[in-house]
Length: 183
Image 1 (cartoon, helix red, strand yellow):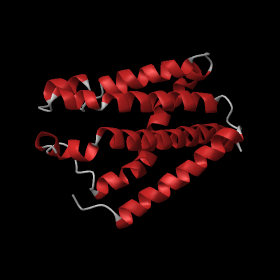
Image 2 (cartoon, rainbow, N blue to C red; image 1 turned 120 degrees about the vertical axis):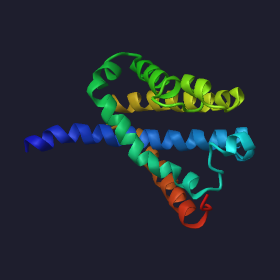
Image 3 (cartoon, rainbow, N blue to C red; image 1 turned 30 degrees about the vertical axis):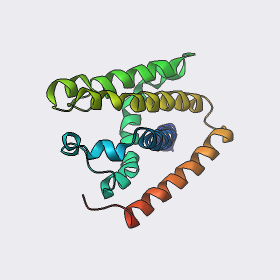
């Protein structure tokens, strides 16, 4: 009884965060994939040594890995949820945290990060081209999650997100089963 009372808020938080992360990750990924021509960009020789081709089964499976990444991020921010949820513009604080820790200064030299610019041989253009996608996805994630978290029972939010989630999940699984190459 006591464990259920403690676990229910955590599981709800994890589920809502993961759902919003999964959906925004896929939508912004698809949008920027299309707008910026990632297939051609990732095929450039200096990029191809760092990025898988967009036809890779791993790329098709990418959204599925967000089902692991989402809960990890949710668990990290759960202890600080009141900072984001009890302030009128708490979503801005959450977004700022993502910008600082996940985009500009993650633990490794990722594209678009300060360490990526310093320690990789990728052209500066490649570092900059991915920043709008990361910034807009984390902005949407922060805003939608905080909005939903303040009204977790709101069906106008969770029903469409759940429907989109199921469609993306199905597309990703079909892509893995019938689409990508082994690269």
